[in-house]
Image (cartoon, rainbow over all chains, first blue to last red; front, side):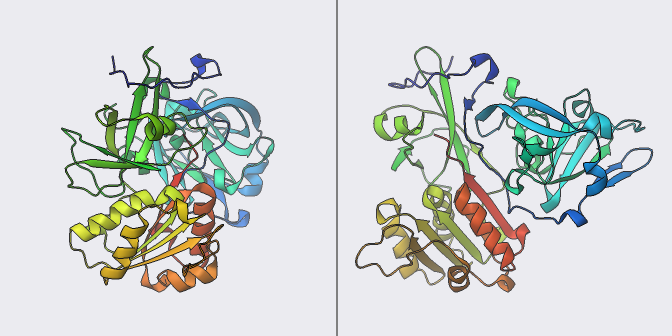
Length: 200
Length: 223
């Protein structure tokens, strides 16, 4: 048991505590965090790719991507910097739609973004209705600060895995640490096991 | 704002710009954790955290109002491998701070001085009022005494009568006067509240700075 901090009372969460992973607090803001400046890729230059270890690479222009079927989902999101935001509403294309019919021996992926950001995940975590390429947040087109025009959304993992400004998924046989993972953050990042940093 | 000086036996050392996670535990086991930049440079015997008190915060009011000499805190760290500077990264350095974002940049300047680095460094520090400037005398001294360091302040809401610094929000003209030109390819460290960081980063990129040489730490309003 951790040592008691003299005189600290804290503020008990008003939300259902069962929805808040260990070490997190609920925010009603939507904080913005990033390692570098916000990219602003014109939609005419935008594409989304599936590449790497798969039968045939696939690519969608913005117009093609915007024509794909989308879902609207309400999920809780958890940032490694300790804030959680409950009941966030997104609209996006499910990775199950994008991966449908893809033949691949890959077990891992790297999501890659404008500006050079990358993050790694097991391919299985993109499947089964657990991941989307999100185009809208709160009923509006996704703002650049929050990753627009499109970001990866994988709410069951810490939110650094939900790569902003995503431009594609690279499928691989091995797990390759992405940007934050190489700086000491966890390769998997399960908020319920508090997997914030390497070794957790 | 309050600077807290901690003795941390077993502290593994840190790099300038990194932060720590502080965890508080109430008697019933309830815990709260937040991150704070380390204000002291590597190699000092004690760790200094400079904490801004957020009125609606949960942890910062405790650290600023309640914590007493002799109290113990649980720390985890150092955390963060990207928003760090050490000599091998070179320069020239452009440090841009909004409010309490100056804390990790101060650690970088102290480290630079400590190692006797000749990398030229410029600091632009934006705050709303003179009362909000942290480390003011120390930074003014750096600018005055170290030929390789130049420091500019801008106060955006309230300037004292005898103020000779800037008195407005950071704009392109101010950046052209103060920041290294884009072709000097500075290594930029930008830290502060989100709105400030977003606006300044955007201006720097549009002024021709390489986005890949702009490192950002945003202080979300987490308490």
